[in-house]
Length: 302
Image (cartoon, rainbow, N blue to C red; front, top):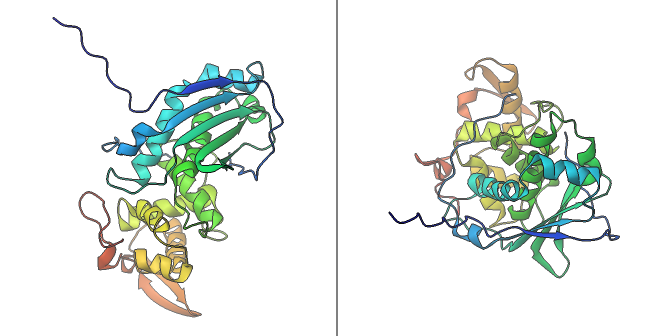
């Protein structure tokens, strides 16, 4: 009997680069905030682009505690590959148009904050995720693995998501990243659903609102939001109506009501142009152009 042929890897191998400490300028940092998670669904057929993304690891100081903790806690190659897979699983299908990101470098170094993602000055298609080893060193042992996976998952979304040519509210951008983290089963126990404040306050606050949209309007709703941001600039008055047939303020009102009520059939009040419109929760249904088929793929949104 012939020996089995080795299986090809889904992603190209991660390249390990260990360098001496350098004075890297800090970019605007994206601090991540530290329920039960929805079960992660099995991946769809992988997008053909995923095989061509180059993944690189840079560690400025192998002797620091944060770097030691990460390397001893997770398999870095698997962690980075699975983070890329999560982004493509939840935001794209095999037929989707995706951003032109060609490489992602995970940089572990001493810095303030938690993590941030940036593009290289000479070519924005090459992304860098900077992850603070000082922060990693302070994570409790019981939270170490899930927090590392969650932060990398969140930041990986920023490497591949659309943002309406830089017109999307930052709260929506961060909310989509935390929604992917939520859907990947990596939400911290401290996260809570809340309709206080504004819908675009970002992070898990917006992430849970996006999960409400996913449940209300069908599987693939957040994917359609991301796809729309890849095709047009963000104009709030028309963006949400084109996708879901309602203003985002109406959707946020309904979300708040759903958090308070035990039944989805309880009455809600939608405020529009200063006037209260009585209705029930079932009135917030998607227009015909964006109803989903059995696969969850959106129709009529181009």
